[in-house]
Length: 185
Image (tube, rainbow, N blue to C red):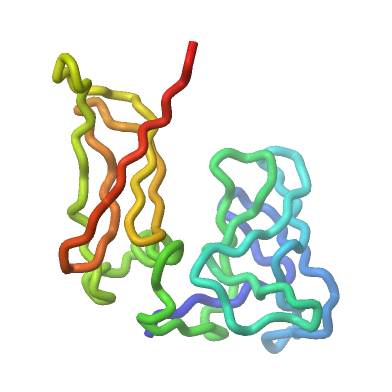
């Protein structure tokens, strides 16, 4: 099982933003602060804007009375900052747990970013690709691409050696489709 802590009113973001959970009748902790749900406002001092919370996978089975998903540690603040700041939970004893079956598709990047071993859920991360010019064989550095494997997509830009980042795939052989993003002049 893997877990993430609930976000509550006035928890912070990685840019020191103030998460302003709207009143919803759902509280947590001895101080009974409101639980935060997707779309609640965040005052971001880094970009001087008001952003909103955005859930990242794995998605939650538990939602509020209005159908919005609860925010958890590691979700995003969509403000003017690039990249978006992450939400940080102040209480770590109030958690939502996820089983290996929940960590699929779009949830894999969260799982890996949280420091978990992808092998624990039957994945490996050794599918990298060298992108070269078909005619000259020259390495193509700085080229935008999308890798796709069984519904999981990874977007990026090739490094200075023309390599993509790794895509997580099941331990058995699977096809990976590589799309190059071409900009016409």
